[in-house]
Each structure stands twice: as C-alpha cells, then as structure tokens.
Length: 146
Image (cartoon, rainbow, N blue to C red):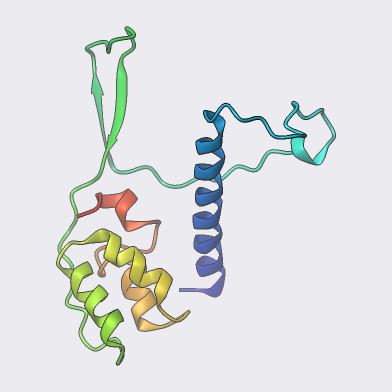
C-alpha cells in the first residue's frame, strides 16, 4: 500500500469525524457567531466532497414509512473468508486485533489499520480486512461491525 493511500484513508477518517461533529451540532439549537450563510466567493462557500465506495448490496422497500416515503438502505456485503494473519510482527496488542479481525470483528480490522505503524504488515492486514479484499475503505462500512 502506498503512503498516498494511507494518507488519503486517514484524511477520509478525519473528514468523516468532522462531518459527524458538524451534524451533531446542527440540531442542538445553539447558533454560534459567524454561522450566517456563506456568500459566494468566500472560503466558507467552497465545498469539499468526500466519496467512499458503497457496499455491494442495497435493499429497497416499497412500503412507505410513517412519512409516506419509501426507503433505500445499504446492507453490508457478506464478507469473504479471511486469511490467517500469520506472523505480522511482535506486538501482542496488534496481534490480538489481527486475531479479532480474522474472526470477523471488522471494527478490530479498522483499529488495527489505524493503530499500527505505517507501511507495516499489521497495517496491510487491517487495511485489507484480514486479506478479504483489496484496500477500499473502512471494513465496518464494507461488512458491518462483525
């Protein structure tokens, strides 16, 4: 995995965390100074777009919900079998995360990726969700929490 992919993935996580915090503040009823709508040409008006790959499976319900809308929800894809982690290094905590990742705990795969040294075998194992796939995004987004 290249350093560019690692940096991009970590940037994606930081962006997702920032978006989550921004969304949490939206419904709080607290308006901070400077929250007026940005005008065209300002830095605040510039939009940043982050995209991730969608899970392989979606489900559409034709039954309307309470508001009368139909719903499309993403269902994580079924995970292919993992490969044994083998000898990834000599860190007992990272070895435990790798074992949990192998057992299908996909949040452990993501934790392994983010807690391991860059460009290490641990990072590659977590990034591939236990060698289940090519690095494409967070394992919990691909397969659910496990």
